[in-house]
Every structure is written in C-alpha cells, then in structure tokens.
Image (cartoon, one colour):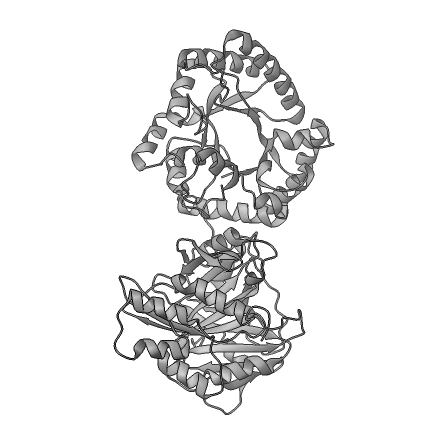
Length: 601
C-alpha cells in the first residue's frame, strides 16, 4: 500500500522533513500547518519541491473548532476554512483533516455538528477538497470514532468522511469489541487513516498523545489488529504515520524517517499485506567481538574467566578466545576513544544467513560492505541503529560459509565447564534511538521484545528492554541512560552462563581476576527477604554475588570490573528464571560508580 508520514513526526525545517521522507521511500506526506507557516517557501514552491521528490501531499492538517458552534461563531470559522481551502489548492492537497471541537463554546448537539460539517464540506467540495473528520480522544462531546461516524453519516455529504487515528481509538482501551464499529463504516467513507503506537502509560491522554506516541511496533497498542479491521472495511488510501514524540523532534530527520518506514513495513507484514522476506530468527550467539586499542587488559580478564586464545585471524589483528560454546573475538583496532574497549559486533547463528540478510535489507537496515581477502568466508552483515555490526553466521554447518575458516589455530585447546555459552549481551543505545533499536531487533532480527524496565541509578534513571528468542537461545538487553550526556550509557556487557556461579567466581579470583565489590547493606537486606542455607549468604557476601528469585526460579550473578566500556557478568539460572536481575541493578550501578567502573579499566 501507499505510505505517508506527517511532517510533525520529523525534526527540522519543512524542506528537511520532505527530503528525509522521500529518501526513506515514503509515497507522500501530511503537511502539518505549523511546518508550512514556518517555511520560507510559498505553497507553490512546496508543491513543486514535493513533486521533485516524488511525494504526494495526501493531507493538510489540522482545521480545528469548526462544528457544533453557535451560528455567530460558525460564520468566522467558515471564513477561516475558505482561506485554508484556497491555500490547499496552491499546495496541491485534496483532503483536509478536521478535528472534533475542543472549544469551550462547542455545543453538545450532534444534529448541529452534522449540519455545520455538511456546510463546511459543501464549501470544500467547491475547491475540489474532501473533509476527513477525526474524533480526538480527550474532547468533551465527540471523542470516539463511532460517534464521529454517526455524525458524518447523519450529514450525508459526499465530500465528508472520517479520519481514523489509531492513537485516539486505542488509547481509550481498544478491546476487540470496541473496534467492531469499524466494520459498519463503508470503506469509501474512511477518507484517511493515521497510525501511531504508544507505550502503555497511566496518564492524561492529551499529554500522552502530544509527547509519547511512537511508531507502530515500538509501543503496546495492537495497531496491526486495528489496521486489519480498517482494511476489511474497504479502506484503500495511504497508511500514514502521525507521531508526536519529544525525542523524535530532537533527532535527525533522516534516521527517524527510515525507522518510521521500517515500522510501516513490519506493520503491513503483521496485518497480512505483502511483506518483506520472512524472518529467520537466530538460534544462538556465534560470537561477540570486542574492538580495543590494547588487547592486554581484556585478554587478562578473559584468561581469568577461563577463556583460551585458540585461534588468530589469517589477515587481521583479531584473536579468537573460547570457553565451551562461548566465543569472544578481540580485535586490536585503532583507538577510537580514550575509553578504549567496546563491544563492536555480534555474530548470530542463523538458519538462513542469506535470507536473514535479504530481510534486513528489505527493512532498510544498512548492509555493511566487507573487505575480504581471497579465501575469506563471505559473511552477511548489517548495522544496528547504534552502529553495532550484526553478522549472520552458520558455524560448522556443511555447505555454508563458516567464519571460523578465516582463523588459524594457535594449538591451544579451549576449556569446557563453567562458562558454556553467552547467556545475554547488553548493548547501550544512543538516548534518541532506544525505540528504534527495539523495532530493529524485533522486525529485522525476529526477536521478541519484553516489557521496558526503568532502573534507578545514583545519577539518574536507566531504561532497559530485553529482546529474545522464544527459547532464550539469544537474549539481548537494550539500555539507555536518562539524558544525552549520561555517562552510564557508555557501558556494555557480556553475560556468561554457568552452572555454578560460586565455583566460577572463585576460579576467576584464583586466576587473578577481580570481582565487583557489593555493599554489605545489600546482603543484610537479602537476609531479611529470603532464607538461605547456613553459610550461603556469607559466600555471596565474600564473592560479590547478587541474588534474585521469581515464580520460575532463581538467578545468581556477579560482575568483573570494567575494561574500557565493557564488563563481564557470570550468571546462573535455575528453574527457568527468565529475568536479568533488574531488582539488583541499582546496587550494581552504585557499586560500579564507586569503583569508577564506567570510565576506566
């Protein structure tokens, strides 16, 4: 279907917004009145710019407070509308959005509203324009889509239809029975469809709408379910995004527009429309790659964790460290920052690496060029929103390229035992790309997002959201700090699974490693909350092991100190525990701040 985005959804000048929408592949735009008013371009020049960019102006919006008014106030409203219709003719827009009246002078009179909307539509029809009437969720009188339709149906004017907005509908509850009325609206009377998602928040709906909308797939609304109902009613117009979001207003228009278009592509897939190549969810973590200007500090930590340097890349300064099924690549690249080591790439085991890459490209993920020497394995890779390189791997599978073929053995054998695999990875996101990252990992990689969690940090608030495969073979935790300058957002970590975290912690210390010290007050609180066998809590206190429990099982974990921007975690999951120790995160963060763990080795 045709796709559109409201200019209010993007940051920058009107020309910047139009350019970003075009480059992202949108067919058209809704022009928000404030963007036009602030532009130095005339309506004719905006129309020409859109034509040059291959964009159709599908909608001009909004026209407010024009129905259910005393006649003395309706007359100037018509005069205002006449000027807007003349402007739309110059702009090349043939549909205007009229919002239900929020004025304190509006009357609770459906018959009057229908009559005045019909008179407005007659005026619009004389200019070749249609009126799309939208119910705002917070107004006093006409606040639901079915009420708006009753008024439009009563008016019986061919130039008057409804605009359905997913936020205004779903923010009021959006249960399946609440959406049944959509089927009663003839498709040709649905003049426009605006789409937005939102996190599920308990707050005033007006503030919710104006500050916290997001693109479909980034929030908690069933936007796909609503879209299916609108399409079943016979709607054939564009799918248009109208998102009011404080973060998007401060972000670069180009990446935001790409994120927006990706959201529509995945939404169409969920709604049963023609879709990109099918997802190929990963089946495991092949490797995590650390980029560092100095391999010695991170090599020392890996050695103390029981890893062995088993191989070296034939043509690049990259070492392979292994323990069990956990593999870490250490790439001695140029120093990008003084804080050194960072998690630069992730290799995901894929059932179909080529198919996963095709899907990623169809969903606008940047495909990474690969400079390969003769004989190097041809690996498919894309860039995540935060710049992390994501490789689609087929480790040890006959007939498919194996990344390990690029490495030569050192002759040393890897140990097996306490760290058999990577349990999860934690990737910190730029503050303005958290929602984009969640959508990327869900839509492009086929991972399932969990609920967002807010974690108290001594210097602010961290937001965290896990994306996983259904079986937990791949777990990635996306985190973001509270502000663009939040230093806590620099940390990344690799969690290593172990069957016995106490033994793993002792072995790490015996090998010369250090573990993050946890305040004694934490263990006093644990003693109050849980009963432990004799001596167990004392062991946790000695080693800095944290403990959590839920209905499924127990979670024990401890941390190394940070090298550059990276630290390691040892985790023991028992009884099917699916969490990540969120209850312990404030204590861990405070301990890392105290140890200067976020800013040095």
